[in-house]
Every structure is written in structure tokens, then in C-alpha cells.
Amino acid sequence: MNKLMFAAIAVAFLGACSTAPQVNAPVDDKSVGATTGSTGGANTSGGAGTGVSGSNVAGGNPLRDPNNVLSKRSVYFDFDSFVVRDEFKPLIEAHARYLAGNRSAHTTIQGNTDERGSREYNIALGQRRADAAKRLMTLQGAQESQIETVSFGKEKPRNPGNDEAAYAENRRDDIVYQGE
Amino acid sequence: MPRSIKCTLAFAVFLFLAASARAQLTIDIVGGAGTTIPISIVPFNSDNGGQAAISSIVAADLARSGLFKMIDAGGISPPPQRATEVRVADWRARGADAVVVGSVRPQADGRADVRFDLVDAVKQQTIASQSYLIGASQSRATAHKIADVIYEKLTGDRGVFSTRIAYVTKQGPRFQLVVADADGADPQTIVSSNEPILSPKWSPEGMRLAYVSFEQKKPVVYVQNLGTGKRAAIANFRGSNSSPAWSPDGRQLAVTLTRDGNSQIFVMSAEGGDVRRVMSSPGIDTEACYTPDGKSLLFTSDRGGSPQIYRIGIDNGAVERVTFDGSYNVSPRALPDGKGIVYVRRDGGRFQVAIMDYATRQTQVLTQGPDDESPSIAPNGKMILYANEASGRGTLAAVSSDGRVKQRLSASAIDVREPAWGPLPQ
Image 1 (spheres, each protein chain N blue to C red):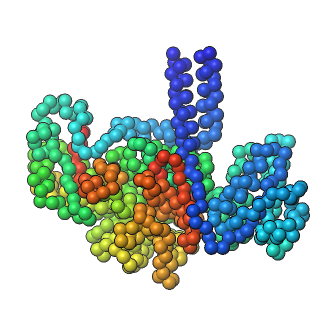
Image 2: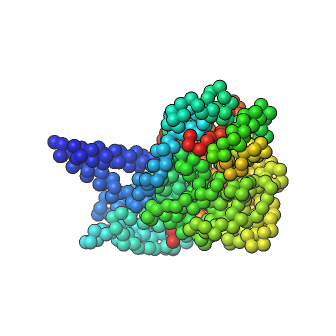
């Protein structure tokens, strides 16, 4: 019974394989699987949850202290704008000071846009938002080499809606530290 | 016990393949050409019922192009199989200007002999005849070749029924880059990831795809060989790496990199390395597309304050602005005849696909919007695939370069985006 079932499924499997030519091979691409496995579901804001580094430093990490401004990681932008609003300058200054005082720390600033317009052009727009935050940080003591700026364009919206509230939430930089 | 694990694994993979087969696109005509060619496709006779599908695939290809009107071929007994058996008066009476007849004869070695004749019923002439000796798995490909011959004879343009397309699907958190025949058949997932995939671009010989994947938590440009399945991160510099475009000889890629600051266009070897900056500008330069002669790049830049399309000579660095009307003109694609571009414009908040002729500077808006993006031109220049949204989900559509024929390409319950039309088979 068991053997029969196995044979039947194996035949079905082989049949499916024989109709799927070589282009199908990368479905099993280990590098893709591995990478996406480790970053799986990464909602890339520096959110809590990735317990490992947090538990190692058990409460002593200012980046994780909810009462510390360093635990705030998102900077929001106006429509069609790359200007860091005054309300977010203290947050960026705090991260700049942290980087200046911790030369081994590295961070990635991820720029995002709302869903309107060309995907590739939005990657360039998101990059400009990330670069704007980086410029402020380097003016305040962070080293250029500590900060990488990248863009997700409109590809990873935090709010999937398509009204102004969703757009405002998605016009954003996220600050993510290495190892998080 | 190991056996049952193996069994479960095999079954899981089988389910996965079955699921990806269900993701096939179906293509519907939603708007036709002004004038169509009335044609009758007589079902090819066959001793083998399975092979009879060839003539129905030919008919489906031609019908989908929107340029033909199918005239009923039933009721003539016996149905003609070759040009000499076609009584033109029968077909003229039905209104057919052209008649296709053919046969499929199984051979002793398991292959089949497929023949067809295309008869011009107006001029009473046979205008095409071909025969093919094919294996059992080549029925669809042969049908597409026959449709290409008929299309070219009757319209004067190359057929694109034998081409392939690529597109990206999103199902829940899963992104898949899929390659399928131009009619949506035989979809194959070539890479899947839990992070976004975008901007697939076919190499000119159709053996490689360049695309952008976020699997390393940032945009990185990959090139994947479709024959071997092997791939390489071709542009993975500090910052963002995106917007790949192939040179017409397949040896170079233009990419947008931010490694030196701004989003700027670079040209590099398609094998990796030899990275050269094309120009320096204070603003954003991206979305490069080679002109068919390989001498220039079209690109999007906001150097003038709003995103507009420009062109630069790769060797002499001379830049000229291409679009002037409106405050948002992006995503340029060169027409294969070198006489104009297809691009996306924003008009009153609507994003629409438009076509511009260089000589007349005339722009024709081809689509309605409001969310049309990522246009990709068929290699004969006659159809444009693009992405839009329907009931909150990404879907694909196509429009003819004169704006008349409109197709909808849909896959049930799956978000589809980022279409790329492959080259003519070589």
C-alpha cells in the first residue's frame, strides 16, 4: 500500500519533472532560498522581534530601549519631497551621535516612496530620501563609511492601501543597524 | 522512514509545479483593429487526434493578434488538405480573403510530417507553403511558426507568435520571475524569493534575463542564463543597483548605480566588471534603454526639474531632451525600427502609455490609465505589453502601436507585473 502510493507519487513527480525543462532549475537555487530564508518576511523597519542580538545585550542596548530616541527608526517625508522635516531632526541627530560614539557601528538607511509612478524612477526617489538623512548624519559626526543608503522604491510598502494616509506612511526612511 | 520523507518531499515539489502551471496567463481581445483580414483556417486532417491541435493553435494565435477575422471553415466535405483542393469560389462566398489548409501525418519513427498551404482567395494564388518534420513535443512551437508565416505574408510585418515573455508574479509574500510562451502557455518559474523582483530584461539572443532582486535586502542586478539556470549578481555595489538594459550586441549592460552618490547611469560588461560611468549629473539619471543602433541611451532624468526623457550619445556624450509636454515622462523604450519611443506619461494624475514619433514629434496616448506602467515592446514593434491594476490587483495588458487592438492578460487571483517581451527566436 505504502509502496504503491510512493510509486504513484514518484511517477507523478517524474512526469511533472519531465515536462519542466532546465529553466526550472533555479527554483531550487540555494542562494535564493537561503537568503530569503534568513531575511524572510523582513519588514525592514528596525522592528523588535529579532531576539538574538536583543537578548545578548539584555536591556543595555540603547538601540532597543523603547524610552530612548534611538529605538525610533522611521523618518517620514512630504509628497514629492526629500527634505527632512524639523520634527525628525532630533531623531537623526541622536543616531548621528550614536554612530560618532560607536565607530564600529554600521547602519543602512532604506528609502521608500508611495506607490505612484514608475518603479525604477521611484527607486531613485527613495534613494534620494535615504541620502538626505545620511547627509544630516555625516554633518553631525557620523562617518560616511558607517552609513550605506539603499532604496526600496515603492516595492515594500509598509501600508498597502492606496489613500493619502497610506502614501504618507510609505514615504519614509528606515534606519537599520548592522546585525539587526 | 526516510522513504516517507522522500515521498512527502516529492509530493510537495509536485504540488508546487502543479500550482505554478495553474498560474498560466489567459489572453483576451478587448478591442479590435479597424480593418481585419477575413481568413479561414481549415482544421488540419490527421490520423492522430492529438496533433489536430496545431491548426487550432494557429487560429488562436491569429485571432489574438486582433488583425484577423475568423471565417467558419465547417461544412465543406471532404475538407481540403492542400492548395490544389481549395475551390476558391466556396471561400469567396463565405467572405474569406485567405484560406489555410494543411495536414499532419504521423511517421513510422514517431515524428509527424506537418504541411500547410496559405491560399490568397482574392488573387487565387498559393502564397506560402511549408512542411516540417517534428517530434511529439514540437506541436505548439510548429503551430506558432506557421502562424508567424501567415501573419507576415498577410500583414507585411514579422510575426511574434514564437517569442516568449517574462513577468513577475506576487502571491502572498512570494515573488516569482516567470518565463512563458507569448500566448501564456508553458509558464516556468525561473527564480522565486520572499523579496521583490523587478525590471526583467531579455538579452538580445533570448538566452539570458537581467533583473533586479531585493533578496540581499537591497536592489542588486542579476543575470541568469535560461539554459543552465546559473546566475550571477552582476552589479552589487554599495548603495542601490537597478534598471538593467542590454546593449543590442548582448555584451554590455547599462545599469543605475548609487555607489558614487546620486542615481547615475553606468555601462558595464554583461559578464561583470569593466564599469564605466556614462555621464555626471547633479540629479537623478535612470531607466536607461539602448537605441537599436547601440550608439545612444535613452534615459529618465530630473535634471530639468521634472522627470523627462533624454538621449545621450555614448561615445560623444551629447545629450538632448526628448520629451517636453507635461511634468512627468518616464520609462523610455526604443522602438525596434529606431523611429521613436514608447514611454509612460502622467496627465492629471493618470499614468498612461504613449508613443512618440521622432520625425513628427507627435505623441499618441495609447492607454487609458490610471496605473499603467513598465511598457515592453514586441520585437516587431507592433504590440506593447504593459502592467496596470484591475480590482486592486496587478495585471498585464497589451495594446497595438496604433492604439486599436487591446488585449487583457490575466491569471486568476495572482498579482502580475513587470512584463518583458522577449526577442525573435534566432
